[in-house]
Image (tube, rainbow, N blue to C red; front, side, top):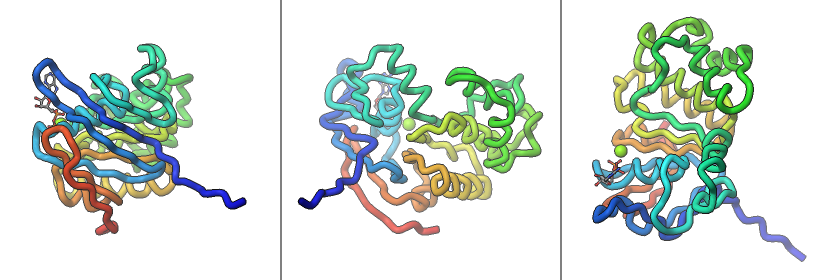
Length: 231
Ligand code: ADP
Ligand code: MG
């Protein structure tokens, strides 16, 4: 008997919908993402990109549809279970760094460990070394450049080894050079850490680093393109 090996999906949505009263932020949306894939989400402002990302990260709940992420049916989880899912399965990076201003880089990363399990300074400094900030462990966010702050966020997002890393316009506040450095770092980490990466961006160049781009309009996917990396 021959066995058919199917690629495993880390994300599967069917008819995913999110409404706010009259406003339908996400029209029924079907999406499947393979484990380890690097997916970019593009689309004009208000097309539903952040709504989708928040649902994938368990930060929000859909109004209808099926939402499977990392083997969990997010609709059926209790608040506590959803919080555990966020802690264990996903890392999220936003446009604003949301670092705690009075904590050092090292302490900011250790906070994420604290909420997950046990803070470990050695492990946290290794994560900061991985993102090229081994010499900036003791600096507070305001002593770092925008690109460095985002690299602390990346270290914080990967410290608990999430299977899914989500980014919402994470290079939106960065200049061209810092954007390039952050993208190079993400590429390296994607290859070594083997997480699935889903990035929302307006930036065509950022999209060029990924393997597949979906374009959204009016809360749904209007184009789905697989690409070779332009880098
Ligand atoms: P994008 O990230 O693509 O710019 P969003 O996902 O933020 O778009 O928003 C999609 C639509 O949903 C927009 O029309 C927006 O105004 C609406 N929306 C998003 N969040 C809320 C909310 N909390 N309450 C009401 N409407 C919202
Ligand atoms: Mg948005």
